[in-house]
Image (cartoon, rainbow, N blue to C red; front, side, top):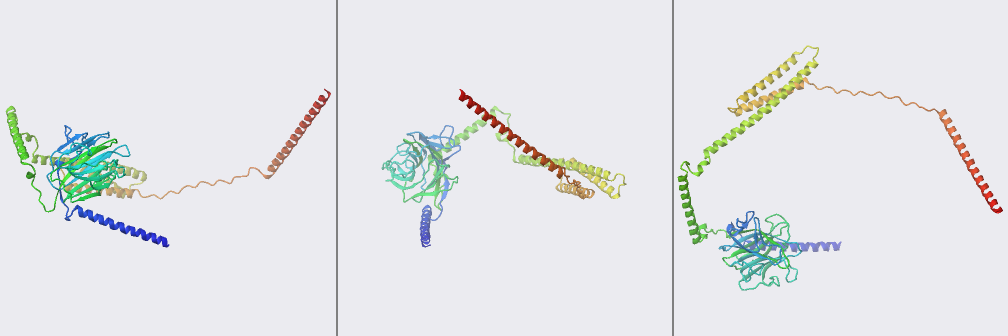
Length: 505
């Protein structure tokens, strides 16, 4: 009993310690996500994002992005490297990012046949485009930050697959032999290979704090993220390019990126700049000039068309219906649907009247059979006359409704008509119940009882038969014994004769 109590207290103490650590970590994460205590404003930036299903253009390029090396864009994803050895590929934004705080959501797959893969995938934010190089397919000595999804264990410490955050000021060479552990600013161990659902990474740079969240790809929930690592007081370039690169070595994996979504983060209370200030003056002049040229070209083509086709009056939009015409068409379609519904109701009422007529004929025949040879009573005549009047009134109402469908029916007349039919059917039901009273159940006929079987054999014949069979059995046994004794005597005589003959010879 004492041992059990000691174990219980030890387990309880460990649970309390774990709970305290968990709450402390959650508090730190929440404080790091929003140091000011408020959620930042997010605005989607389409010029720095891509997502399927229509990801590529007709020429195979991705809008606002450039791809190099072995990267292969398709309609729903970009395959950075195929599962071949010694491959390098990357995609980069064409224009630099001009805002200071951002949030990137990346959805990707890393899949291969082997138990381990190589080399890995990287997400970049650098001052210059590292189109090709030895660091996961991108250039070394970058100025910015790289988030590496390393799937190969170069240092043999069995600490892969891992997610490593590495910063660089443009002068450091990446430490491949140690998997960047000597230069890592933050890391976490996560297995991101061969998952049933795409792996999602959320990278937030807000108030000089870089936070990485990971969705391991075990569930289809898009917001099921868990904390990976956080780097505080991190300085990155104010303007830079986003990129995704991957590389393979002696081992190979398919590195596919399904989407890259970028959001601008703005502190609460800070006004966003107007769109015209975000576009450079040169681009504004370029777009304005293109618009003016388009307007002049359109005007010229209109004049040429009117000269070549003077019989055509009005503009190209005259072929479309106006608002009043559209409303009139909707009213006409609604009236047509009402008319079809009324016709369907007429058919159903006709079927009901046919059933009623059949019931009246059946009742008439039944009454005629029951009253054969008897004078019909006054009550029966009254019921039959009521049935005929009901049938005649229903037919008259059905005919008048069919004639008045062209002009339409009012709501009150339609409701009154259905109420009358309902009342007629109730009258028919009551009359039928009156004419067909319930009959008493018929008693079942009992079958006659069979006489008891008579005895076919008496005692005396049975005894006689048993005695005869016994005598015959004993006679047969005695006869068989005599036959066997005679056979034995004959055998002995033959043997004696044989021995005697043998002596004489």
